[in-house]
Amino acid sequence: MKNNIVGLSSEKSRIVFYRPDILFGAAGQPDILLDGNKVGRSLRGTVFYVDIEPGKHQITVPAMLYPGETTINIEAIQGELIYVKTSMGGASFIGRTDVEKINAEQAIKEIENLVFLSEPNRPQKASNYREKESYR
Image 1 (cartoon, rainbow, N blue to C red):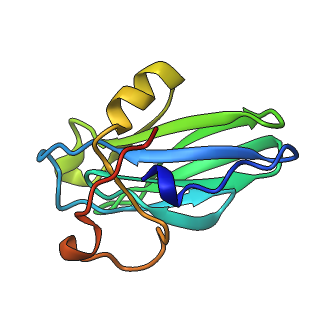
Image 2 (cartoon, one colour):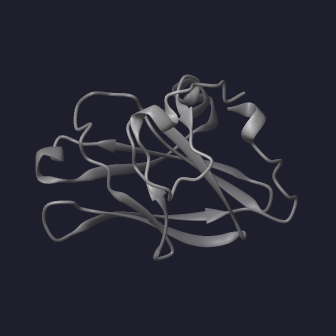
């Protein structure tokens, strides 16, 4: 994956979104919204990033099977790299996705074997994103 990553501009911040490759809740693929705009989907075993302006931002993942959503607020500092993990929580059978900010050390370990999506809004088929590359 490293070869596909563009360097971060010194004026921007970056959010790295990822979802571990865990079978539980694998069918759930909810949208990920940043400040109300779709930036990608929570797909099992994948990682993608979005460069943003520094400041306050809201990350929302709508519930799939009932009204509601999971939301976290973050504040990005210029040049900062923020890791956000999505996962199907214990309530995944009703369509709820957990969203949490993760420290860099933990995130890098968890991302190591995930598949990088260079176009996270594009519909993905398993054969389109199974080629794994290292994140480092």
